[in-house]
Amino acid sequence: MSGDVVQLHTPLGEEVLSLRAGDHVELSGIVYTARDEAHIRMKAKGIPFDPKGAVIYHCGPVVQDNRIIAAGPTTSARMNELSGFLLDSGVRALIGKGGMGALVREQLKNRGVYLAFTGGCAALASSHMTLKGVFFEDLGMAEAIWVIELDHLPLVVGIDAQGNDLFDKVIQRAKREYEQNRKKV
Amino acid sequence: MKTPADTAIHASLADATFQAYREAVIRLPPDVLRVIRKAAATETSPVARGEFANILKNIEEAEHLGVPLCQDTGVPVVYLTIPPDVSLTRGLYDGVAEGIRRATREIPLRPNVVDPLTRHNTGDNTGQGMPAIHVKPGDSFTVTVLPKGAGAENSSRITMLLPTHQYGIEGFVVDTMLHAEGKPCPPVFLGIGIGSTFDGAASLAKEALLLSVDRMDDYEQKICNSVNKLGIGPMGLGGDTTALAVKVKTAACHTASLPVAVNVQCWAHRHATVEVKRVR
Image (cartoon, rainbow over all chains, first blue to last red; front, top):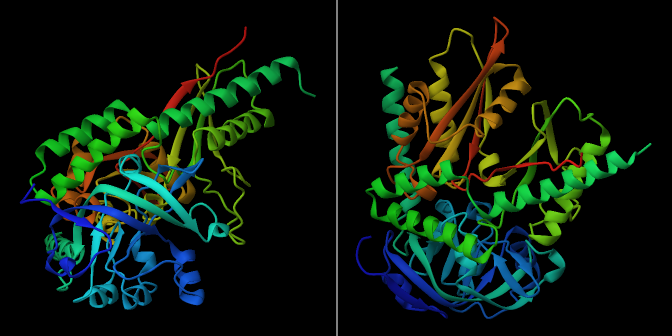
């Protein structure tokens, strides 16, 4: 691993602006899970928590008896068109997997960061989590907004507030590699 | 009419299905673990090493806590082998479905199964044609559960190549992964079905995932190397390991056809086989 792990605690502030794509961080404090349905509901009816400095986690957990059983990230790209209003309201970080498009990369500039958590690591995630509450429970287990307290969840900065995007860099290089090999055939 | 023997088989098949699902979602098979550990040890990118560290810790935590590795506990794909003295009846399908419902309640699993058009969730991971059950004759009575998550399944593709374009197979596999990017939770396992018919190639691709993944022949290794040259890496964050293994399964096909299917599987390549207990 390169360098030190940056410690972050919610609510987040301007400290996120100095993070760089590729930095390892550990996040503690409150996060709010939200997938497609929760985004649509919040956009139409308002955000049910204080969005200033808040963190959104793209996740549909398995919850049993008021306990988080498994809570890995879902594919963030599904929320590409649905995230602007959250950042406009003061949200400072989005957590998920797979990265987000150019639109979100622009929306994050000078405001916030995208933090990647390892897909499939639901048991590891739950061992860093305590369930604190829920909004929109009628949307069902996967789509409700779960209020979760994190204790040092290990993440990597995927997109920083300067527009550096690890995912985009990787895919641009993969495309060049693919084109070069195709010419050889 | 149900005989007492039918009822006993129903109950033991439901139990075996439950056990196999539980084993599959909590513990990875030994060959899968071996290739993940090997790749983690040789990975050179610092970001990718961090991803592997999380993956290895997650595998430990799931076992320690007795909870699913991933919250996407998939849709149930089930393979049954039926010995000569067991009749293939509707009851066998019901027994498997009963095991899936119990697994959903007790493990627990996330209810993922919905109607394709209304999107109504059945709440118990069964539905029309689900679990997907594949039956083959065999010497022993076993049930294999392969829970299939959506991220990886959604990146899978099929093509009908010209029969003279065998050289295009590798390109199609690499292109599939290029389009998938980080979405299927790489590093992935790729099951490749070559030959048969349109639908048969897709079945072969999925069955290829059940072959031992810690051995590759020269052809599989060559495709795997080409995929890894893309550098997509764990979670699309870049790195040496994009594919952990490529497995190929073939079947005879029409002289004018070359069906090729790629079934993408995430690093959490979950599957387990349990023998169905028989009362003699």
